[in-house]
Image (cartoon, rainbow, N blue to C red; front, top):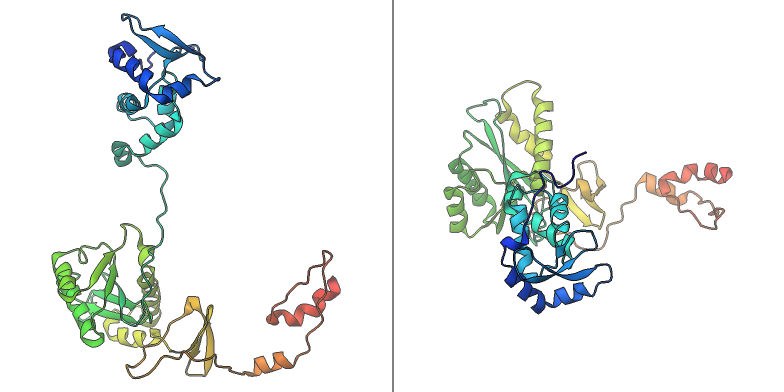
Length: 361
């Protein structure tokens, strides 16, 4: 096996300003604290070819100079800029030749912040957090927009401009003949003419939503336009989830028929929400065609209310169904403690299985 010194990176301290290094060692308080460290063997040694004495550590068998704070980054750049190695390789190169306080953490930080390494290497991908915009206080205050397509040509339309209101979850889908910024701006003006000007607008980084026409329209109307991060569609998940339902409904309804433009209004009528009677922390009470039903907040689709119609913010509405009445009249068995003394709580829907469970205990 060849020795480790063959084809290794060499660094001669004499090629630097050894006098400056010696002066900084005497004036830097970090060097004094490092010299008092018992795990190091610090000695004064003269550099070959000069008369300058430096503080070096000889505990590893080689002379490692104690580097003051002002010269650490320069030494790191000299080694790291040779071929831009990783964190562990850079640590190995520097720890074999130099020593200073918090050496490993400094090297890791400088390697992570190296712009050339970031632009040319693929490291561990960082998961971006979800977009957390301020919660709207009224309907049509904050909108999410996006594009769907290209689709099979139907009456000259190939794209769908989608809009979802963040407060009421009210969806809108406008067919477009072309996915240009001008067509998207006209579709947004069509929404504004019916529902009013919104305050905030969220979209992806498509060329339509970062164009000059789109920015000028938002600036003219006083709309704050926000774009999500690139390659992060989940940050605009409200409208992306609406696309999933819209595409599934189109596929199930058309069954190969390319005339989706005629079916789109009917599908939107089925997707649009119902009236909300009560808002709870985990579920909402909705007024459906067949009666009143409780829907979890994940599947919630609040309704659009007329301007003169107040929202239902009163006390909870008690709706008695045959199932709830039978559950109330059903005798509840006495709780049975487990071996550890804990009283298990069984949901009401599992009350029929409770006697069997008690017999097994």
